[in-house]
Length: 283
Ligand code: ADP
Ligand code: MG
Image 1 (tube, rainbow, N blue to C red):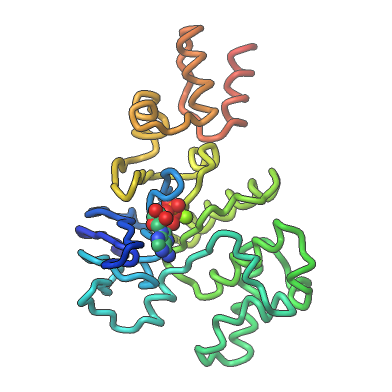
Image 2: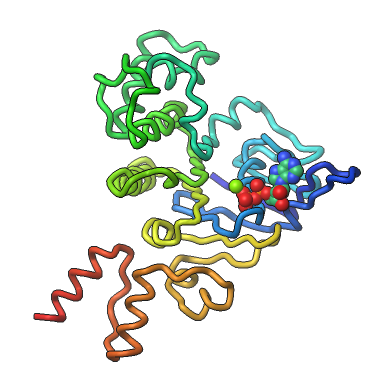
């Protein structure tokens, strides 16, 4: 499914004293069926960029193409409900938006307007729960009484239940402990590998991004300044330095070993794989 930004600018409060240019002339293709990381300092335009994807915002100039829909000032969107079912956005702290009394109601809420038969609705909710690693015993539980990690899973299930092709995560690791983060990494990989989803992740967590992403998009003050595969960006110390991106720990370690010991280690996504390499060397 094509996702493309063509000469997209976005201005908040145009023609007022509060005018704020959030995106400037962005040309970008999001890689289909891959994990795309969107990085940049606070205020660089990341959330604005993704809110254009399902027409929560409409470009001030230029157009965003999602599949057969064009989101533009004079755009043509066949059916906005259908567009919103193609693009699922898991917003920051999604569990703060909970308002239903059971997990089941929370997950099926967004589906109710679509006239599913009850048994089909139940199956979809149950399948979405299973995808995030929770079983049916959670259906009647109170979402407010779950752990942080479980709440985050329910919030994600409430998006997966639509079966969107594109899934956006805005800062998904904030507030999660180590195990929940590990589970999230597994889930996102499965969404790509087994279900062929296109994933976009906004995150400040450079080690998480380095671990999970295939492609990287860097914004700065509303400008697109770098795109490329993870190997050409986050794994390249010269590029990290040039664009002022913090160095992922795995890259930093490998780089130090190369500089100080002259040993070139294989490229690793995950610190545990790197540790195995080190034990192998040490033997
Ligand atoms: P990020 O997600 O990278 O932190 P945002 O897309 O939220 O960046 O914001 C980009 C710029 O637009 C920032 O300067 C921000 O202050 C401004 N901005 C975001 N939302 C609004 C809004 N609703 N009204 C006015 N300015 C906004
Ligand atoms: Mg943001």
